[in-house]
Image 1 (cartoon, rainbow, N blue to C red):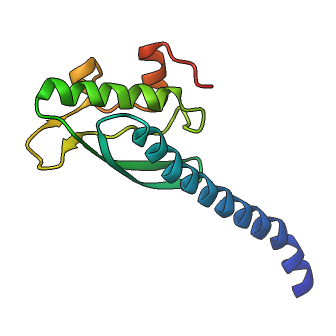
Image 2: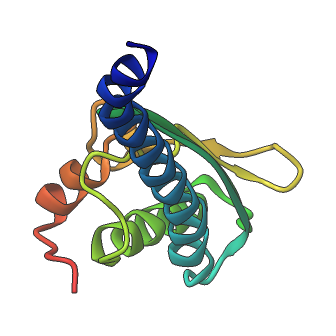
Length: 135
């Protein structure tokens, strides 16, 4: 009787293990792909991400430090970073872009609303906004 119970639970255990391993792979991909795209942009000093992939969802938090002496320069660097995210085939449409981009000394902070977005967009919204197809 106990053996039958174990056999019925086996598919659920295997499915859960598979989902956890896929989730971990997605988070690792996110944590590598976002910084790689950001660091390809001149004016980006550093980029770090923390990502979590859950069952059917998750979150992404990015910290992007930029080099700029004026707000216009900061906006230009952020705009280029957003375009790099849109062009990256390694980033998924549903993943969120950073809420802010900050200079090293913290004196200038810009966000995607400075280039026409209503808050921090996801990658798919950035692709649509700029008309960029990754690849």
